Amino acid sequence: MLGAGSTAIGASALVGSGAFTSVASQRTVSIRAAHDENAYLGLQRVPDSPNSSYVDYDDGHLRIQMDEANPNLEDEELGTGVNSDSITVFKDLFRIQNQGKQPIYVFAFLKGKKADRVGLFGGDYSPCWGLKLDVGEYEDIGLVTNTLDIPAETQLVEDMFIVAIGEENPEDGDHERAAESHVPDDAEASKELPSE
View (spheres, helix red, strand yellow):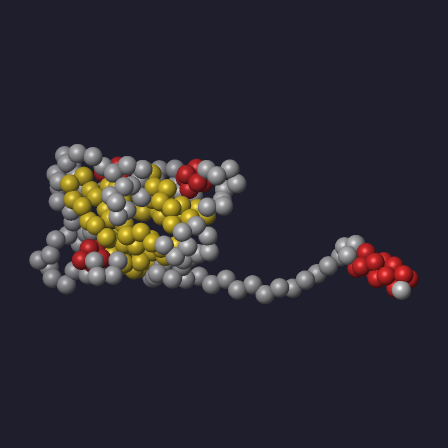
């Protein structure tokens, strides 16, 4: 009996040694691109929000259109932009949802000549900056513009960047710096809402 026990220990040591000259392993990988509504970082219209008419999808990618190109304009008599020399607020414009597998921090950036006059905010009217979303959670996002002393026909913003950083990343825990590394240098961080 003692000999059998010794043999079993010896075989276990041999199998678990991990010594090999080479290994080639084929594994299955399945990665699929998804439209914004169904991606891990879900970007969606807010159901039943009257302001969702300013949001549509271009080839599955969410876009905000507050100009004459808005495809939801069914009547030529409807407006084609925000008021000049005014402060305008749009609540519940679009939804950001964490459809991934770990908590995330969300940061918004805007790019354009007057990007500092536009801000994105969450449900409590705080800037969309460092917004934490657990798995399955969402936040309805609004937009505010300040066009005081800005003439009509001025293009305020051309691009919006929504960056989500996983809670576990980066290793140093600086989610803000990690988010800033993912956008162009001339994109404005939406850390503050435009003031009067």
